[in-house]
Structure formats: structure tokens, C-alpha cells
Amino acid sequence: MSESGEQIVRNRVAGCPPAVLRSEVYEDEATRSLVEQFIADLPGRLAAMDGAWRRGEMAHLSHLAMLLKGAAGGFGYPDMAQAAEELSRAAIGGEPIVQARCAIHRLASLYEAALRGIEWNGR
Image 1 (tube, helix red, strand yellow):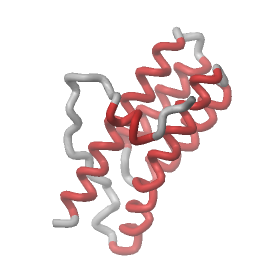
Image 2: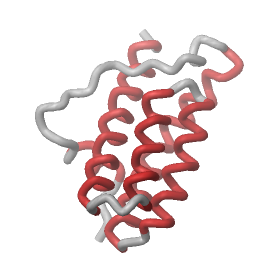
Image 3: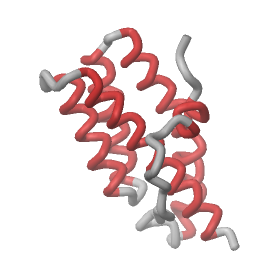
Image 4: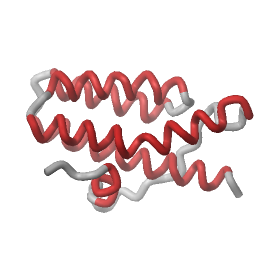
């Protein structure tokens, strides 16, 4: 059974509390709702990546990570885009499978930080 995106966030690597991560384009009123929707959709993306990892579908995991890389970069989250690229490379680059799992947890931590950034902007 695959973990939900929220479970992945709760199970992130202990000792690495997320910072607040703010979108570079959030201040633009035209993109604000799109950024918020991107963040709202991230738990589902994380769950899909986790499922691909659990099934050993590394090519699919890499594909999902590259889709996230493009979206994260477009919505002003370069750190998340870089982490997604690292996940993609780990998934297909012959790295030990645990490297991909760690990369998923890093993305979950960045999601939590981005969620805090959205909440912080709403104050």
C-alpha cells in the first residue's frame, strides 16, 4: 500500500525541519492562485512518486520527477525544481534505490516549507 502525500510529509527525515520556502512569482496577482493550486496538488504528486518507487518503476518515477521539475521551476520554486531533477537522476542513474527514496523525502520537506510560505504570505 502506498503512503499518501501527507504521510510522506510526516515521515520525512527527522532532524531536518523545513524552512519557509516562498515562490518567486507569488507576489504577482496573476499567478498567485496558480501557485496555490500547484502547492495544493503536491501531496498527490508525492504519493504518485512514492507509488512508482514502491513498485520499482524507476523510469516512471523519473518521468514524474521531471514533470515536477518543470512545474516547480515555472511556479518560482527553483530549490524544488533542483530536488526533482536530483530525484530523476537517482531514479534512472543507477544509484541505490534508497537514494531515490531520500530524494522523495526531501521533496516532501520542501512541500511542507512551501506550504508554510503560502501560509506566511496570507498573513
